[in-house]
Length: 240
Ligand SMILES: [Zn+2]
Image 1 (cartoon, helix red, strand yellow):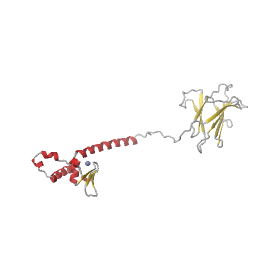
Image 2 (cartoon, helix red, strand yellow):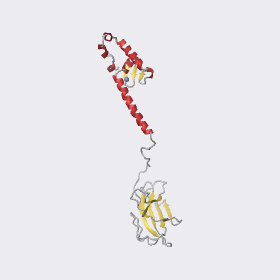
Image 3 (cartoon, protein in one colour):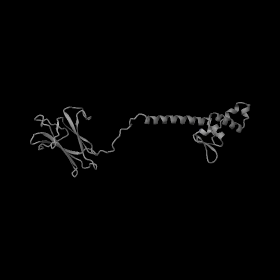
Image 4 (cartoon, protein in one colour):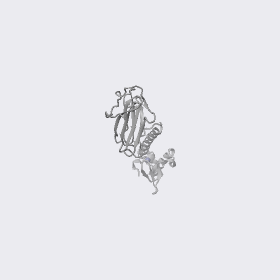
């Protein structure tokens, strides 16, 4: 029973008529009052339970009759809960609208890979014995490479990369193989000779070593001294 909402008690001091109003009369009056504004059949909070009494699903109160329930709906507790519910639903609707509104992903899709650090590598300066072209041999070790992964590479222009301030004098060779971090070699921005046989890559599945060798196009002589590749430590006897 919802004793808090025994609506009507305050009316007893109103006048002679209401003072003598019986409990049944009072309920009937409130029921009629409620009927003017509420269609109980459409009330989502009205429920007849299996014991034959009535419940307000909003306030979780028990009522012995429809009249009692209807009187309750006019009370402060029910009205306050209605207002709270309305505010809550408005807020939830707003959240849902925001979520389905703009077709903008809230979180960028990310690949589910835990990086395990940089691979070991060796860089060797090479020279074509015939054409005297200069180049590099890269050998990168991937002992813990993921299954079915083959290292990938690509050249990247100075303005394409976002790690360093762009400098037209350089380009970058990027090598990637999950779950290792991708690594970049900064090399001079001279054209790479893509003639078959001059440029090659090799992935050795057994030793887990990725090799890549290329030569620069022979545009001018004496480039060997100018060749710079930070983070590389080419051995002095590396020429082929
Ligand atoms: Zn209620």
